Length: 61
Image (cartoon, rainbow, N blue to C red; front, side):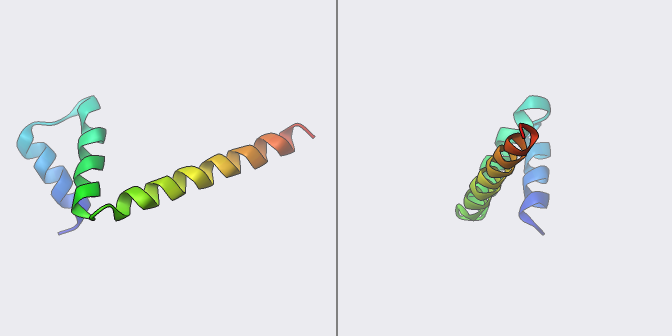
């Protein structure tokens, strides 16, 4: 069973839904992967920021 599958099952078991789902799922997966998912999410965020900056720069030319 994947981290995501376990996370969704646990959220369902605890009755977590709606706006509370995202923080619960991210925290569950971060703990389940011993922090590796947090590192990946930070790298994805940084990549998106860099891409956004390049796009914004190119649109001003």
